[in-house]
Length: 213
Length: 391
Image (cartoon, rainbow over all chains, first blue to last red):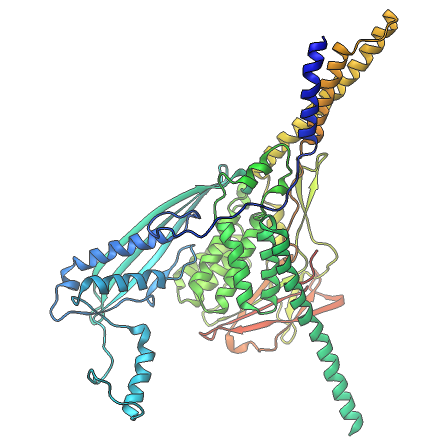
């Protein structure tokens, strides 16, 4: 009997000490983490179900390759003038996004890879160009060293597209999923025909801890 | 000449002294909310960003409002799996309030609402629409099927963002769905490009109910009478589009409630077990002493008493209280009306009325913050109670 008492007494005291006064620490006193570079083409430490860096990198890469393989866009002589910006690239999805992240990357990647097979019109810089042309024509500055033209460049083709999404939620499990479809279309700016189309899609799902559902 | 000069000076001073404290109070409240971000840390980070964002939004401090709501939404949009604070909050020995605050669905939805309004003010209609859609998704977490995604305000605003963006088909789709929830709502005319939004009342409150304070219940904000709103100059009555308290209180049981319920059962079982064991041990020891005339040995009876004490300790150590932190500078309801942009004055005053649309005994009227976005469309926003009035 004494042995039983000897065993149970310290155990009970330990249990009481441990349970009755669980420490409450409101502050997250983690030691933190030094800055690290992460690969933009891989999933980072912080993830959601929206469009992330790896999605933009892989979608623009896919579209660029596809466009360069299209003879209407990349096999013409003289090289076609193309406008790639976010003006006609619509976001109809439930993800907030700066669309320029997609269109800027696509234009720059294309411009570097096309090597003159496509000429890109900087329509988003047209104000800047107009101001300089006015200064030149008014005689405030000289004519520069390249050439003078009657007007700024007109485009042959322009990018249009759409980001759309479909969300689904299972309230029982708290699992949320989002299917996103991003379409890219190159439009003939005289005829209105679509000379090239590309599509990129992804579906992501995640489940929150029960405490946050 | 002199009396006129004196009167005008006095008037200037009075008007100045009326508005100056409001602006000063707003600055002080924003500073205080930002201070709380630092002092209360990650646990209350989202809550304090929501509070600070609301104060900044009211003061038309767009940059600060965007910063605060973006910070809150980045956390809300993240997924918390295998999270240390969540694991603690689920355990027996910590209350639910240990977790990092992310808000209940209605609070998350309202954070998206303010983010969407900030986008509307900048004519970024597509991202505004994305925000309102995200708000609707948050509302889909309701347990009660009939209350899922019934946040009419967000549906209206999704349609409004599409309307301003020229996406008439998308606007029509959203408003057709809205009509199923608000049949009496009149869809904005094609030439309406100004939206007046007015918020009334005080935030829904969260209380812990039940014997172990494990049940989360909602109560409407206290001490306010305003329930309707009209435009002071024209008398146009705004449409009461959303009751935020109703959104909070109709969600139904939360998944975490079953965990808290289990903890309460554990608490009760151990309390009962502990009481029985200690009572039996004491009674048996007394009986033993009475029959034998000897003092009861500490062996068997002592062990029983000890086991009882341990069970009682487990019971008192278990924490099952529901988390009652809430976004306290939200409003109770949102009212809307739309009209052509040319008909909205930059000096727009809204008057708040009781539930029967009659004047209040203590009249309340506020000046709206009127924003003409880069495309010439108008968003006028006002609230009956200053956002600085919170706990």
